[in-house]
Length: 253
Length: 319
Image (cartoon, rainbow over all chains, first blue to last red; front, side, top):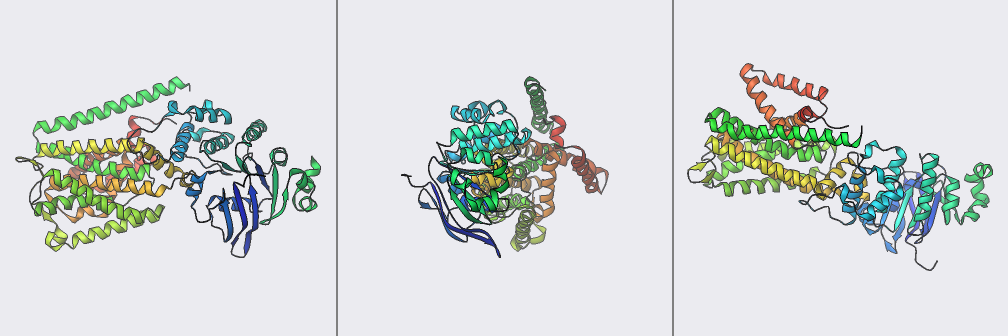
């Protein structure tokens, strides 16, 4: 890789009391690369993401975004640098419409929240770029609908649309396929495939078929530590990974 | 339901709202012309409380936090009118801005601490601060302490045209109410308002979008406090008296009552709530000494049966 990584964690450690949830994790994501983080439930994937996005403080270790140390920055400040996160359970605004979310994303990314007098943008004023994003995730026809009326899969799509309209260079996607039906799943995978060259993406996902077809590199997290990291082929054939995690799942395919 | 039906339904909602508030505005404009001081003062009373209720709605409805201390800012308005009059300053052009600034400053301070908390703690901290201000007012010996003091002189527009005249007071407070409601409406439909609403709905997500809710919420709290004091200036003139009772937590509770009765987060609802509160207070207290008891029953009925408050009676919210 000629370019420097967009995200790099170095020996990140986090423990809750005696419980070590993140154990000297070092990984990197390069621009245009999709790095998948896999591991069994309770391996500490979401905890690691919370430390990267700044919702949790690390005990020790360093996190760099585009080679800048971001440990001391708040979640909001890290987001402003150019990282955007889609949550495992979609985090949306209960009383807003789909379009309202896109407008909110625009207000945030342009930092125009202190415009206090001029009327905020409305549905028909969505920029063509934002309409395009809604089209890509398949929500354009629902733009005027209240978020609360969306199906679960559509909420996921909306959260991804918000991330895409934030001018981020790093996307952190926490199980974007969880809870999606087969067709929605396929659409989401197709969308991720189209996105992956344009962003650095850290993907947490349980759907192994999706991971193996999308990811450039895979890291396996077990009990808080990375037990293997490499290309899809390397991970598939890693004996340690097989015994600790993949085992039955690989043989089934 | 098709899209056109939805639009039609909300159109009829909008026109019913427009009719209701046109009638209310017309009443407020015409009633003082009857030259019946009692009814004119009733209009003033509604406007004064509606100013406080709209201010409080910014916090309760839009910020999603229950403040049980807004009487503190109302009271700062009351005492500003009184103390300034004592010092010989009665021009409206001075009294209103000074009350506004004073309550804004205190609001900024109280908000800066209380907005770091959520839920129950927020209620308690705002209550605690307002009780502190209540006791400070009670301790002002030179300003009547416990008993308060007579407003030495009414607030004056120009010579011979002052707020002790019921008509002048009613129209002045109606103007202030309309200005406050308009400013609140503009604020809540701007980008700023969207950030406030988004922070109420999901502050974690607002953070992850790169905005910190706190400075926005503090700005709103400061504005709300400042606007609330404008009602207080009217209240001092209406009663021609300055009393610590206007800062008591009972007063805060009544403001909250108006907001909830009308429907929080709507701005128009609290105006209806204030009007209904004043009317009920007049009617019930003429009828029985225990009018508060019946007011309680009415609030219970509203909570149990009117999902969107009095405003919902006029314009049923779409589901």
